[in-house]
Amino acid sequence: MSRAPRTGVVAAVALVTALLCCTFASGDVFSVALDDGRTDYIEAARIDGAWYFRLADVARAVGASRHWSPRTSKMSLAVGIHRISLASDSQFVALDGEPINVHRSVVTRDGEYWVPTRFVTSAVGLAVNSEIAVDEAGAAISVVKLGALVMSVGLEERPGGTAAVIALNDRAEFAIRSRERGRIDFFLPGAALLDSLDILEGVGLVSSVVVEESEAGLNGVVRVVPSATAYDAQMHTNPPRLEVLVVAEREQSVPPPLLKGTKNLLGMGANPFAVLDDGITTVMIDPGHGGTDRGHAGSSGLLEKDVTLAIADEIARHLRHEGFYVFMTRSSDSRVPLKRRAEIANLAGADIFISIHCGAWHSTAASGFRVSYYVPVPDDVVDKSSAGTRGLRRGSPGVRRGGVGDLRWGGPQENLTDESRALARAVRGRMSGALPNYDRGVGGADLAVLAGCAMPAILVEAGFITNASDATLLADAGFREDVARAVARGVAEYSDSFGGRNQ
Image 1 (cartoon, rainbow, N blue to C red):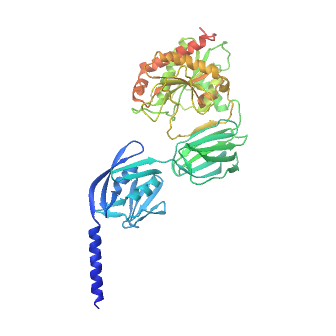
Image 2: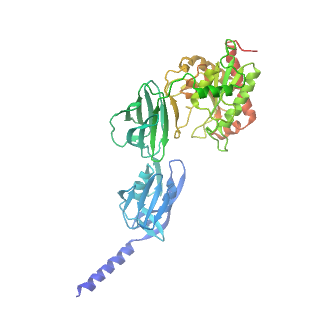
Image 3: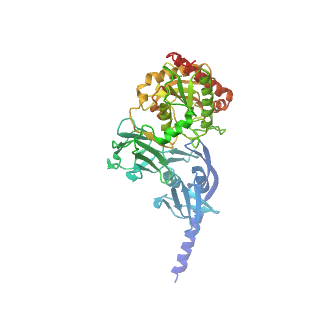
C-alpha cells in the first residue's frame, strides 16, 4: 500500500519538472529573404531550448492560408494546391496526406500555433518548392525557389488532336518552338526529373515524347506524325502541368473566315489582288495585340494594345502622305489571331509588313527601342554593326501563357532574310536620330508573327512598357508621333532604294 503514494509523488515531480523545462521565451524576430526580393519578418520563440516560429507569420510569408477543423481539432495550411495538416503536441505533420517527422512537437500558446525549425525547412519548403534555410545565429531565413520536378509524362487523345501532358510538382516557366519538320522542342529551365523516364511511345498525332535532364534544366522533344499541322502549349496550375496539344488542321490556301475578314479590313472597294506598280508600293501595318489580347501593361495601367494601335494609325497617315497604299491588320480594338496577320498581308499583296509592339521584361531597368527581323534560330542574332552594347533578347522569362504554333516549316520569310534586315536597318537608322530613349539596335529573332509573311517584314518595339521612363514616353502623343514619323521615313528610304512608289 505504500507504493501508490510513492508512485503519485514521483509522477507529480516528473510533471513539475517537465513544466519547468518547457520554457517559453518569445519576442525575437527572424528576417525572411524571399526569392522575389521581398523581405518579411517572423516572430520566433525559444521553447525547450529550440527555436520555434509563429505559424501565422510563416503562412503570411509564403502566401498560405490557415484553416482550423473543429471536427479533427487540427490546423492546416493551404499553399497553392498543397495542404499541410498539423496538430498540437505532435511531431508528425502531413503534406497532402503523406506524414513528415519534424522532430519536435508542434506547440500552442495563448491560442497561437508555434512550429519547429524543421517544419519550416521541410514541410513548408516542399509545399512551396523551395530550399528554405534557417540561420539561427543571424536570426535570418532564406527562401530560394527550386526548379519544378517532372512527376510523369503521358499522352491523351483530345477532341481534334493529341495532348502530351507533362505533370509537374509546381507551375514553371517554359519555352517551346518547332525548329524542324516533325518535332516540337520544349525547355523547362531549372527543372529536373523526379525519376528516370523511358521514351513514351506514340498515340494519335504524337509518335513519341523524349525528356532529358541537363545542367540548365529539362529538355523535351514531342515528335509528331506528318499530318500534324499546329500545336497549342499551355502551362496549367491545378494540378501543375504543361500540355502540348497537337492538332491536324484542314489545309486551305485562304480559309473562308479569313477571306471575309480581310475584305472588311481592307475597306470597301479595295482589291487586294490588284498589281499596283513594280517596286515598293503597298505597306501592311500590324498593330500588335488587340481585343481580349491586351499585350503587356505598364505600372500606370497603360496597355500595349492601345499604344500599338495609336502608333500604327500615325504611321499609316504618314505613309499615305508619302504616296503609299497602306492597310492595317486591325483598325480598332479587335483581336486578330497571330497566324492570320501574315495571311492578311499575303492576301493583300503587301510589299512590306511592319508589326508594332512594346518591349517588356521582368526587370524594370530594361529600356529602349529595337527593330527585329525573322531568323529561324533559337536565340537572337544581334546585328553588331548597328546594335547597342546593352542589347537584350526579346521576350520575358516569366511564365508563358501559351499560344498556337504553326508547324508548316520552311515559311517564306526564311528566304527574305537579307531584304528584311535591310528594311530593319533603314527604319532603325531613322528612329536612332529621332527618339530620346535607348537604342537597342537591330536583331534577328524567331518571331512567329513574321514567319509566314511573303514580303520583307520587321517588328518594331518602340520602348519598354515595363520601364517607367519608357512608359511615360509611350503614353505621350508627341513621342508616338515621333516614332511613327521615323518608321515612315525608314520605309520611304528603303522604298527609294528599289523605286516604283506612287507619287
